[in-house]
Image 1 (cartoon, one colour):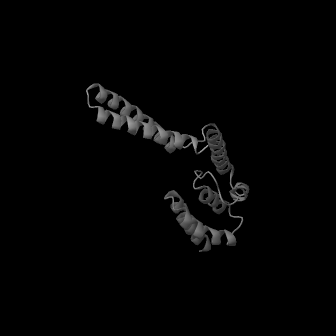
Image 2 (cartoon, rainbow, N blue to C red; image 1 turned 135 degrees about the horizontal axis):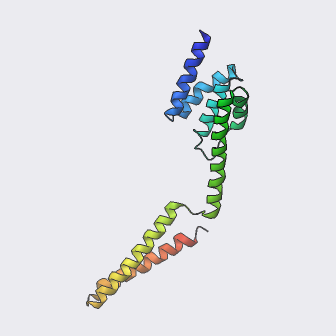
Image 3 (spheres, rainbow, N blue to C red; image 1 turned 180 degrees about the vertical axis):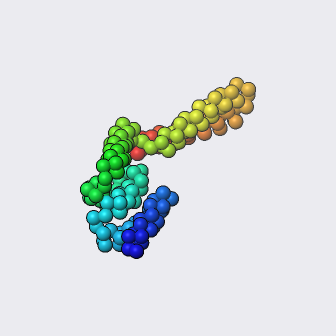
Length: 161
């Protein structure tokens, strides 16, 4: 009976991980691991919860301890799969660190910067065209807006460094 109850708890935790409900899974898993600290599958589920299925970049707790216990109690096929997932996770973390070092600016900032440059050139071109067609006031207003956008672009780009 206890084995069946354990299987039900682990199945429920696994389903919650599959549904990406990691907080609920952790709430169920912590007391279970206190009762069964050497249970391999439960320790591997804790690795999944803490790393959010190997997607979380910064893990608050030490998941490697749970990973080692899970490896000790897994069969050969499970060990190979666990190690493969773990190595891929660690490699992704290293790759994301390298990418962050190469391009520290966020994509959002880059898109905003590109948008400002587009608006700047658009305002200047339309302003010049309006000046040629003797609508000097409208043209100068657009050129003024372009200058304002240029100042905003400069501040956005150079004040965050």
